Amino acid sequence: MGVPMAAHVARTVPTRVWNRTFSRAEAHAAEFGSTAAALEDAAGADVIFSCLPTSAEVDACIGQMLPFLRRGAVWVDCTSGRPAAAREQAARLAEVGVAFVDAPVSGGPAGARAGTLAVMVGGDEAVFGRVRALLDSFGGTVLRVGPVGSGFAVKAVNNVLMGLHLLSVAEGLASLKKQGVDLAPALTVLNASSGSSFSSQNKVAQQVFTRQFSPMFKLGLLAKDAGIALENVQEVQGSAPLIAQTAMMLRAAQQMIGSDVDHTEAVRLLEALNGVELS
Image 1 (tube, rainbow, N blue to C red):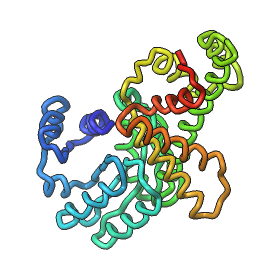
Image 2: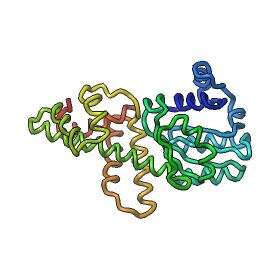
Image 3: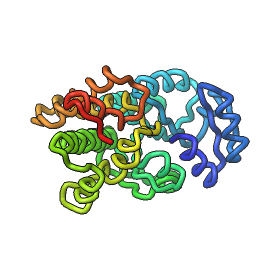
Image 4: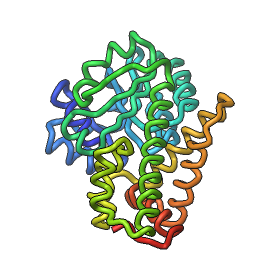
């Protein structure tokens, strides 16, 4: 995701790129016209984008870059992180005069390449305005959803809903197969009816029925995001039994199948429970 996002930014403004594997930064520079930079040079930019697996990696990155950051800069974190971590990171950066917004994205690699990602931003309105044009370079829908941490909160809900939709359609199809129903036409009918979802329309026939499970978004990351959504509910003492059940099932699927497989392989958990294969 980060490679095409940075490519869009590089087409908008001069861009320095840094990666923990420096050869990847060099490859990006060669392909997209950015500049591969050492960490301290990247840290001196007016706007810094991070896009990492979890908030823990962002914490480590901030720690490394803190001595080199420019007062007046803005840090934009596109990680699917924790709202509480975002607030802590914003406070830490404010001590050296750097503003922070959380700006996670949705839309997958295809959306990143096309520059049509949905970007949900948490942060001060004025700070959002300062980086809006850069976010627009890779986003089709770019909206501020509240103060710092709000973007991460919305992304967690988005992803737990994606997991819920995937598991629910798999559960429904497994029950239909056990009843002797032909799944391909049944799915076509469901997708033309009120039971359709993004997962039923774009994942089941293409990846589950074909058994290809092309790696696009790791199951471990989806389970992490569902856990964040549940953590957020618990922090405000809310009631969300479906989020809780989804988070539990995704964690079980991760433990059964593995973290690095595509998230659509979570359907194997429902297949195992029902003794059928969705094909």
